[in-house]
Length: 371
Image 1 (cartoon, rainbow, N blue to C red):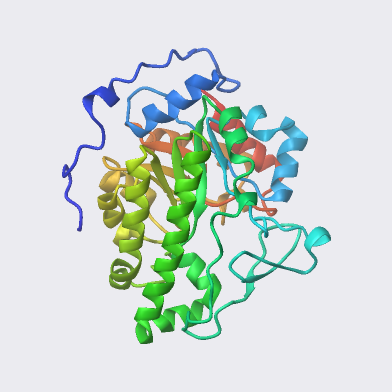
Image 2: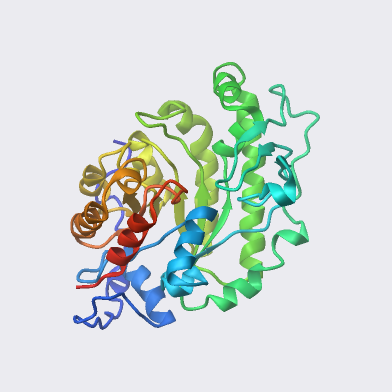
C-alpha cells in the first residue's frame, strides 16, 4: 500500500464543524434546498459529516436526457435540483457531436477523428500520431478564446451550487491520439515518447486550469482519464506510476494551490493505484463501477480518505433490472456507502440509451427521496 492510513487528516476540525443543514424529516417526494444549501451539502459530504442524506448526481447521454426532460421538464439541473453543477471549456468537437451537424465524422482540437452518432459520444477512429514521434506535431493552443467565452457567465449563474469544471484528459487523450494498441506498445518500446506526449498534454491542462481560474469562481476541477478495464488496469500500475503519476501530481497540485477540489473519473478496476491518487490529493473518485470493483471494499479500505461518486450498476441493473430492484439498490447504496458521509450517489457511467424509462425514473425518484 503506497499511502498510510492517517498520514494526513482529510479535514480540519474547523471544516468538520460546517454548520448543519436543517432537514425536513417529513420530506419524502424529493430534496429541495436553496442554492447555498446545495453547496454546503456537498462540502459536508466531502468532510464526512454525519447525519445528512446522501447527495446525488446524474449524467445523461442525449437519448436518456430526452427521457428525463420528457418526464421531469427542463432544464434538468433545476428540475432534479442537482447539488453539483458541471461545465467544460468549449471544443470544436463537442462531447456529443450530432451527425446532422458534423457528418459521419468530427475532428477534435488535437487532430483525432471521431465517428459520430445520435446516441453517444462516438469512437476515436483516426489517431493523429501515426508514429511515436512528436517532431512534426504541434499541440493545440489552450488559449483559444472560444474555449472560455461561456465560463464566467456559467460560474455566476450557478453560484451557490457546487461547481466543477472538466479540464481534460491525459493518458486517455494519449490513447486517442496514438491508438490504444500502439500507445501500450510505446510504453514498452518508446517510453521517452510517451513521457513527452503526456508532458505536452499536462501543459495543456495546466494552462486550461489557469485560464479557468481567471474567468470565474468555482469549487473543483474534474479530470477524465480511464486507466481500468473490467478485471484490471489497462496500463500496469508500475508504468502508471512512472509515466502518468508525475503528470497528475502537477495537475492536482495546481488545483490545490487554488483551493479547488479534485474530481477524477476513471472507469474500470483501478484498485492498485487508488492509494497513489489519495497521496496526490484526490478528493472525489468517480464512477466506481460495481461490475469492476467491490465498492463496499473500497469504502472500508479508502473511505476515510476519499469521497466516492457513482456505484449504481449500468451494465446489468439499470438495463435489465425491474424498477423495484433499482429502488432497492439505491436504498442499499445510500445506507451502506453513505454511512459516515463521503458518498455521492450516481450511476457507474453516464446513463445510456439502453436504460428503460421506468428504471430511470425509479433511480432518480429514489435517489431524491429523503426519509
